[in-house]
Image (tube, rainbow, N blue to C red; front, side, top):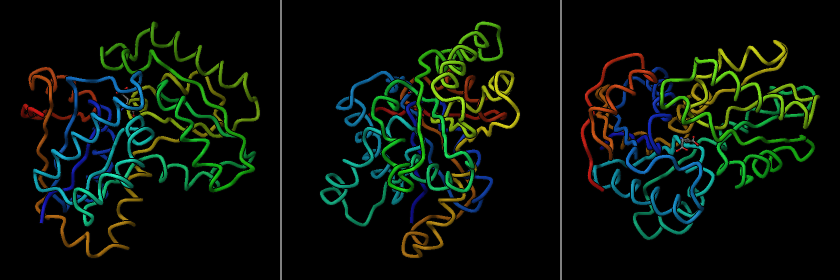
Length: 271
Ligand code: DGL
């Protein structure tokens, strides 16, 4: 048995971890943030894949049988290749799951106009993973996406509630709504963005639904573990979480408080 691994390029996955631990408090978790190499959102397909694979292999070597890529960019650019090419070579009984598929699976029940917007990092938007996955479920849904390159740096610098952040949020929201004024649901396709929800709400009509991923991914993982008892039995129960960062733990501990609303003591991990 081993802990469930939760991977992100940095801090954003902590928003997902929070909701997963609320829904499934009984398991042990390892969180790994690749803060030394963040951001992933502006990097090439090859680099995101290489970095993500290294981190997944590290989590496997620490005893994880199941790893969640709690990062949209990694889910968009690395998940499929890892599932199809690397897992059979490394250990076919281990599993890596992402955050895009669970998010789009619930879309048809949420959007009544069938016009959906995506706000994400440049890497996730360029990958077109969201429109591809959404159209597998319902080809009639209209999808428009806008990249928000400034949002992650604003959050990581604790400037997300400043007037500077409001300027960029309004700019990107306006871009999206001008592309398609019929949008009634917007997916926040980046794990950092839930911290901007109070600012985003200022520039959207209240009737437009903002879809953030944490609770959706948590519900999907719960369902997955129910449907896969062979994996559930390999997930250690203890209710703990150990945090690792590839950067210095001091900075991670301070910034993690923003995402978790609690103090943590992370450990440094050399890849
Ligand atoms: N965690 C990443 C995501 O969800 C955003 C941060 C980054 O660019 O590394 O796309």
